[in-house]
Length: 152
Length: 255
Image (cartoon, rainbow over all chains, first blue to last red; front, top):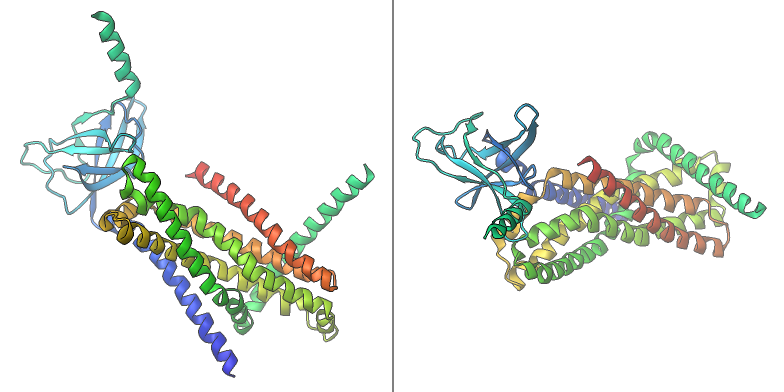
C-alpha cells in the first residue's frame, strides 16, 4: 500500500510540474497577452520595406510600442501595406506622425520607427499614416555613391 | 546480390511489422486508458523517475548556453538578446532533442530490458496462456506512459534550462535582467512554443515505440536482452535526429 502511495504522489507531482512548465513556457516566455489585450491597428504604405518582417517591433523614441501585424503587397499601387498593431496604452499618437523603417544596430533586424507629428488629432484604429520613409537599401546607396563620385 | 536482396526484404519486413505493432498499440490505447492505474504506474517509471536527471541536465545545458551565448553575442555587442537566444535554442532544438536522448538512455533502456526480460523468462507466454494479451497488459501501458511523459519532461527541461541560462547570464555575467526577459518575450512567439511541443510529442512516440518494440521482440537470451537495450538507444538517437531535421524543415517551410 505504501508503494502505490509513493507512485501516486510521484506521478501527480511529475504531471503537475510538467504542466506548470508548459504554462511557464506559453505565458512567461512569449508576449501573447501583452499586446493582444487592448491594441489598435494602423496602416502605412512603403515603397520598399527592406528586411522588415511580421512581428518586427514598432518603436517611438526607441521605446517599443507595438509590432508589425502584417505585410501585404498592393498589386495596384506596387507598394507594401504594413499593418502596425499599437498597444492601446499609447493612444495619443498624432495623426501626422511619420513612419520610417530603421535598422537596430549594425547587424540588427529592422523595425518601424515612428516620429510624432504636430497634429492635435490622434490616430485611431484603421487609420493610415501618410508620411512614410522606406528602408534604405544598401545596394542603392552604394550605387548612388559610385555615380556621384564618378561625376567629380 | 541475393544476400543484399534478402537484407532489403528483411528490413522492409521489420519496418512493416513495426508499423503494424504501432497500429496495434494505438488501437488498444483507449481500452488501456480506461485503466488509469496501469498507465500512471508507467508515467511514474518513465517520467517521475527521470525528473531529477532531466532537471540537472536541463540546468547545465541552459547554463552552458548562457555562457556560450554571452561570450559569442558580446562580439556583436548584443548580450541583451541572450534571453531570446537561449529561449529559442532550448525551446526549439536542445530541449526536445536532448530530453529525447536522455529519455532513451534512462527510460527507453529500462523499458526494453524489462520487457525483454519478461520475454526471456517466458512471462509473456505465460500471460498468453492465461488469455491475457501481453500487448494490452504490458506493451501498451508502457508505450502510453512514455509518450505522455516525454512532452512533460521536455517542458520541464526547457524551463529549467531557461532558468539556468538566466542564472549564468544575469547574476553572474551581468546581462540586464529586464532586457533578458523582455527580449525573450518580444521575440518568442507561440509558434516557437508549438514547434517544441510538436517535436517532443513526436520524439516521445518514437522513443517509446522503439523501446517497447525492441523489448517485445528481444531474442530470449541474456545476450538478446542486452542487444535489445543497446539497439533501443542507437535506433532512437538516429530516428530522433532525422525526425528533428524533418520537423524543423517543415516548420521553416510552413512558417
